[in-house]
Image 1 (tube, one colour):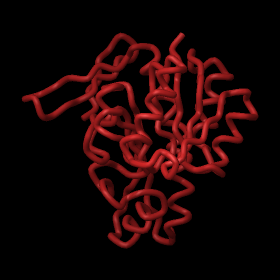
Image 2 (cartoon, rainbow, N blue to C red):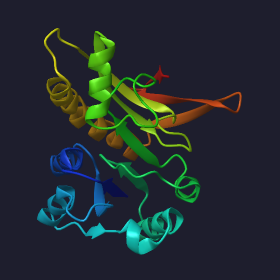
Image 3 (tube, one colour):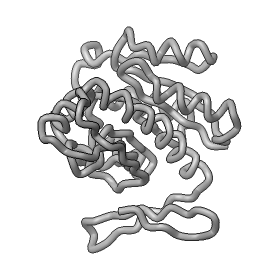
Image 4 (cartoon, rainbow, N blue to C red):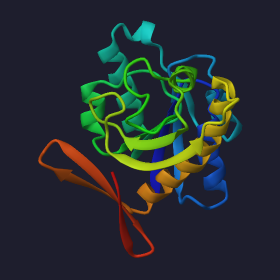
Amino acid sequence: MLKIGVLVSGSGTNLQAIIDAIKQNNIIAEIVVVISDKKNAFGLQRAINENIPAIFISKKQAGSIENFNTEIVNTLKDHLVDLVVLAGYLSILSHHFISTYRNRIINIHPSLIPSFCGNGFYGIKVHEAAIKQGVKISGATVHFVDEGTDTGAIILQKAVEVLPLDTAETLQQRILKLEHELLPLAVKLFCENRLQIIEIENTITKVLVIQNELLSCRT
């Protein structure tokens, strides 16, 4: 059984979606640690409620971003983590962190990457940008994490219509429902060894998702 470490910065609703999927036996894995960069993140309380080790790691006490990330990596190693899930985690991962867990870190982003992603696009800011731009479709993306910001190989995406009277807040709530569907599914696929990263010309990557003995390519 694979061991999962989840990183959170806020309320942890995506963490809860994974916890619920595991409890329903939709995911055969174990969350062995939840780590937050925010002392009062409610995601930590969600972990405590499920008797999962909940750990706050302070950037200030670490002294540097590199030391901060190293402390997280060491904590993940201590818990023998196989898969790292970023569930509303807002801190940037170091090169050391990414190289240590290469192709074993997945993230959820509240847009259809490559739209409204990258530096500065997080939380409600993503949806504010979508509303301002006047797009008709938005959605959510689960992807592997690499050294860029929201540039890793895409695992799953799902779209939602942007309604004429939508605000950033109403759009955020509808996309959050997609996140709660997609992130547990991506974790399930990883744990069942149904994801394969294909490298193209050494710079571009795609993910093959193995479903029902068929290969479907999601770019």
